[in-house]
Image (cartoon, rainbow, N blue to C red; front, top):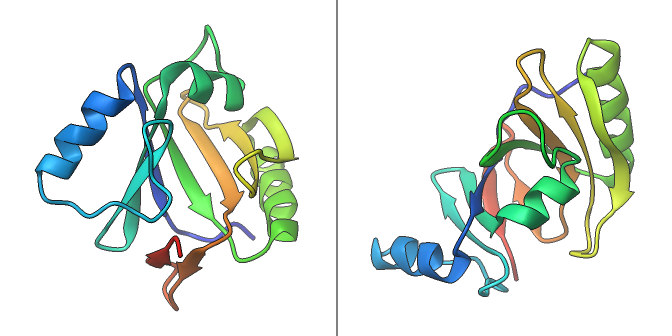
Length: 141
């Protein structure tokens, strides 16, 4: 079963340091470990993440095709759940963009696209804590 939740919206940044300054300028506190290569903000139970455009396209397996500029993420409680949820999405008709993989950032994730080509990531991220309703309650150390 695929949990009915949206935990992370990742924006592809052409100039991550400038975009990071903008969101910090709104007064939004960053997640621990944020820097000019990746940063995130917890906003009312959902994470807004900023990631370089090229790196996001490469990681999501969507370079040169489909909608770009963002991914939607569904976080799960364990690395094993990443594989199960990814497989269930593909069985339900999603197009597999990238198989579940251990990531350099320490987590595990895989990507699929819905029938309109919108990119979804199923992920387990160390340090991300989900509440009883699947909302993000903490992220980082």
